[in-house]
Length: 505
Image 1 (tube, rainbow, N blue to C red):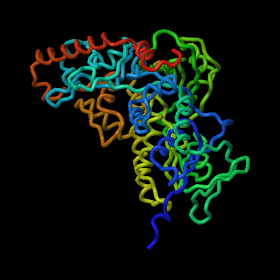
Image 2 (image 1 turned 180 degrees about the horizontal axis):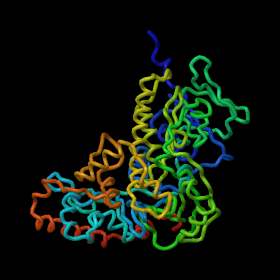
Image 3 (image 1 turned 90 degrees about the vertical axis):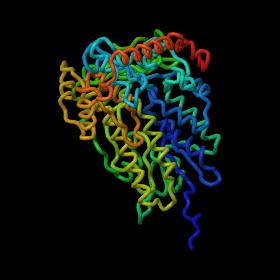
Image 4 (image 1 turned 60 degrees about the vertical axis):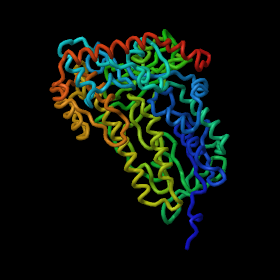
């Protein structure tokens, strides 16, 4: 009988640093004993990373908790701030905005979604806004923040948050974490990759200084280049640019100006959108656009004109192609981060997709022979994650009424995936949203974007319709009042940061 120990992964080689590489290294180092599995990371200081400042979603809290990272220490090290959601400006119509909160809207009643009852009252009050019933929205609009309370009876238990931080500083923070736990960093550029002649498995990489690094499992975190997944293994790429036509970004940081906002802002422009990410020491900004509808000079000028502080350098241009690999795991190589796929950061999902790649790898950590069924399961799970996020991002573009530019005319009239079409029809005709399996975006998220972009259900739930309207109005008035009072009592976001995790603020 074969000795099971002869079929164990003894060495993992991570190719590339940045957020993807060091998040992977940190997670593996927290779970794998360096005596049992050696982990090496190869990166070159001469090769830059894409990181331009990072806005996240609440799942990042789970990742940091897995590593045992102290929140205040992390925020200080990364110039981090808190994030309660995203404000979307000019997405449905010019001059309109809405807020996508991380927390819930109101409270469900009799097992029926809150928005069904809100729609009953909306008919009699056109000025009523769904976000008035979200504590995250109310606090964000007042520039307030506090940590949630554990008592479910308190309205403060409805707070759900994420972070803004310096992505380069986060990678440094995780590098220190991983190296303390045995990860070996190797400086240098990879010049060649050796594969097994029989099965095509990657056996080693050789650096420009002549060093050869062998491994059993290779993780490609080499960014858009895809050094292993594309250049070596030639794994095809699914191109989704016909649904998501933006293909270029220009990014620049500027000096902080005004109050420290506890939310990300996304402003739709002539041929794309502009982001604003506030950290303690500066504000991150970027213009994402379709090169078919806007040239680089116009995009650069749009970005600079939208800054609310002095730019801290020249805008940096980044080209990308929206989509993902047909297989994230090929032979003994797993692509994590940009080497596996890219979806524009409209809903701040970049680090989440890295997390998913890492967590699924850990849950399916292989033996050295890399069983095909393990690879198939991983590829199926990651593909589904990317497709679910893709559909949610497409919704923002498709659900527009803008007709003021060729770009928005294209987005408004384009066909969309059947999976999104079905969700849209279900909400528009019946006001229902269902969350499938362990998909990322909650019902609250879908409802916030649908209603925020004027996709209003044609009917109200029959059970909600049977409840007497005065009773609904009293319940909603009570919720709205409690939320407004709770938001008013919170400290400002900046005051909370100064007390909790200051970093030169």
